[in-house]
Image (cartoon, rainbow, N blue to C red):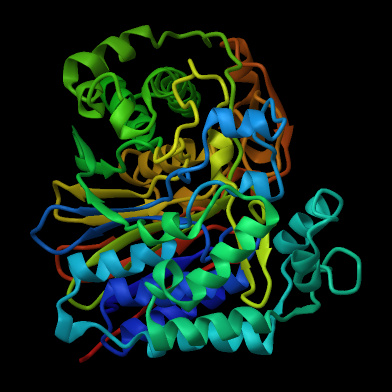
Length: 526
């Protein structure tokens, strides 16, 4: 019987994570190794200069949440951007690089909170696989090739970026080799010095000097003052168990609201159309709450938990009718990786890492191979906006890792990339697995829907994958849903995954056919 598992949207990261688990490493250390590796394997979706969020749960304990997202730099004010001649934060380039990268500090905080000192593997061991990938080269996937084509013109002025990701002056092509020797050297440096060097060591000096020279508002003092934080996860009770997700500034509240509304309304006699209709309508209600309320924690008008009591959820559920309610609603894209794992001791991790848009800001620190995020685009230069730019504040995040402790003794780590699609895909796979009784892999692979925008998409409408449209399109149209059909297993529907541990210690895992990923299971006998 398998007692360890790792799932990731790239098979190489899953293999690296499972190898560590098989050797007796903790779930946190295995995730750090995979986090470094997938930054090499899927560079369009994430970077070591991006953000991360962790949910870690040890058997019998409450989940612990690590917030490793960056806040706005001290210079990054509305007035400063007006002085640069900006009416809005630019999408690419140095002015879009205004928030710190928290991923590396998140590694340290996760180990500090969740791994005993004697169990911590050396960083050299954890980062060696990623270093080898960066130095020896990776095979360009279809996903990476599409992203490279998309940003080729918009990042034409980013010389250091193009030296790595367009070395022949053209976009990357599927199947060719991509090497990032500078990133290999950075990983080797971090292995020797530790992740903190990114914030107050030699690497920090290099990063701060380049960002300042390029015109970013980030300075050395911003990096020195940054540290990831442990926060309290959000939770809600349903008929199947306790569900957990991330608090603001993420949309974890929306993810929990969708499932809680669905749970209040659920009828086992529902048809497939009833199920999808109810989830779509629950999404609309949850997104309206999210878009009114979620911002930096210091700005929240009321605690996020206040929206998760049965009375508040009941009011939202009461609005869900038999007909589709009006839409669209403004939406946000995003580029992300989600990964999950369980170690031999039963500790589970739900982890998500991102640069926001594909390749983030595009700003690449010469000699390091690091591409900076552009998560600060979630800020507004309107002082009255709920996410108005202000130094030290965190931007709104679509990222949200999910976890569940089920009443039957199972525990479940699950999540996906995909901007606005993250809460919806979480809801689809969770309800199919636990309410409909489908196998985990089928719960992820079956046709999905998306309300709003996600990776590579600009439309706010409802989209159905072709197989789902054939099955339910007519019925949904009769209920007032206006939708368009997209190909089956479309990448815009996200890269989902899940790991489940059973009460007897057995495990199962699944990955999304929409990604290049894999779900690996194995045995650790140490």
